[in-house]
Image 1 (tube, helix red, strand yellow):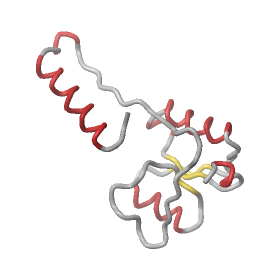
Image 2 (cartoon, helix red, strand yellow; image 1 turned 135 degrees about the vertical axis):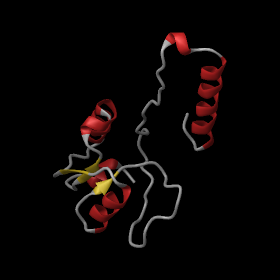
Image 3 (cartoon, one colour; image 1 turned 60 degrees about the vertical axis):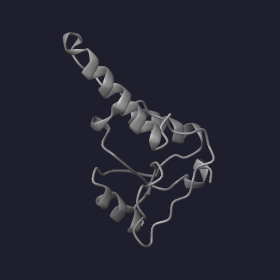
Image 4 (cartoon, one colour; image 1 turned 90 degrees about the horizontal axis):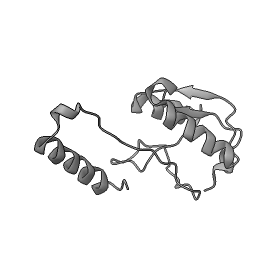
Length: 117
């Protein structure tokens, strides 16, 4: 599926204040690929997101779900350059050391195990 297929549909997305750079990146990628939402609806809770989509109030862009989607929802992979985001961790320099290195390696391994590059 191409993003332009969704042109004119509403978009269900998390509120911008949760992750401004990711939010802006997603909207820019939609625009650059021909999807101009007719409306933007904000939702944080996955159950609320599903409810909005099931009610026909918008489409939602997300990674492949870990569990089955509720009955009535359909997932379609997008055949465009992937929407991407970075995950990072921050700590005080004086608190570095072996524990922080071990945490960073474990977090990276966990992200990679579910398909994050």
